[in-house]
Image 1 (tube, rainbow, N blue to C red):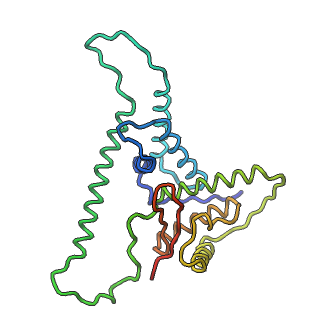
Image 2 (image 1 turned 120 degrees about the horizontal axis):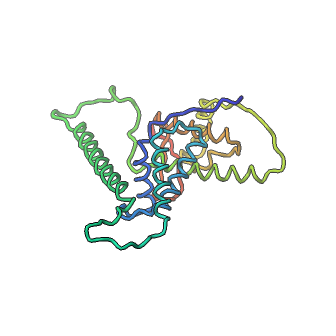
Image 3 (image 1 turned 90 degrees about the horizontal axis):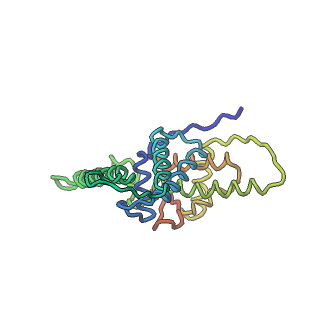
Length: 248
C-alpha cells in the first residue's frame, strides 16, 4: 500500500484568512459578498489542498460546510408574506460572515501595524553605528508584496487540473512507483534556478506529469521558502508567479 504524504503547513492562518485573500484577489465588496462565487473559489482551494495531501484543519471544513449551506439558502426563491408591523424580516445569511470578516480584517491590519512598529523600533539605536557583520546570520530579509501561500496554491490548482486532463487523454496506463526524496528535489530546483539566471516561472518547475512528482516538487518549494533560499513574486493578481533565488 502506498504511504501518502501527511504535511501540516503553518503558513495557513485559518479559513477567514483564506476568505479574505479571495475577497481581495477578486476585488469583492465585503459588504455584498456573492456567496455562490466565493464558495466555488473556496472549494477549489480546499480540493487542491486535499489533492496535495495536506493536513487540513477541521475549521476549514466547517467553513466549507457553512458556505455551502449559505449558498443553498441564498438559492431558495424569495417568498412574499403579509407581515405585521411588529415582525422583522429574516436576517441576510451573509450578515454574520460579513461581521466576522470585518472584525478579522481589523485585527489583521492592527497586527501588521504593530509588526511594522516593532521592525522600526528594532532599527532604532541610541548610540553611533557599530560594525555588526559578526552578528548577522547571512539571511536576507524577505520583502513585502511576495506571493502568498494562497497564490502558490492557486498555481498548484492549475497544474493539477492540467495533470488530470493528461491522464484522461492517455490510452495506456503504466503503474510506476519512483520514490523522489524531497532533499534531492530541493537541490534540483536550486540548480535549475541558478542555471536560469536566478529567476524562473513557477510552472517551469513542474516538467514531470506524474502526480507524485508534482506533490514532491510542491513540498520542496515550501521547504526552500521556509529556509529563505527562494521566494515567489506575483506583481498583480492573476499575473505569472515567478520564483527567485535569495540574494547572498
